[in-house]
Image (cartoon, rainbow, N blue to C red; front, side, top):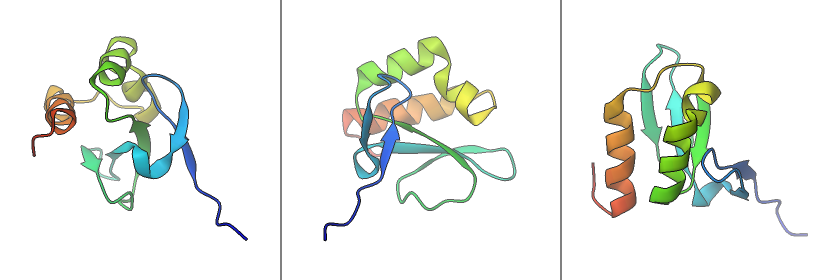
Length: 89
């Protein structure tokens, strides 16, 4: 029997994809917003494709802000953009 692969919705393109293929943005219990590459950090999470177009859509619609119920700092968006370009922010 095959193991079920968890699916999550990208906040940019709104498509459901495998959880492992997405980047998790997490609002910790202390209110800070960080990127969670392991997928295990405690707190409220939202997912986005590793695609700059999805990041632009999510930024324009403020989808990540609404999902995490907090205003996301510009530094988090900058780090996401660097990760998508292949850099290690």
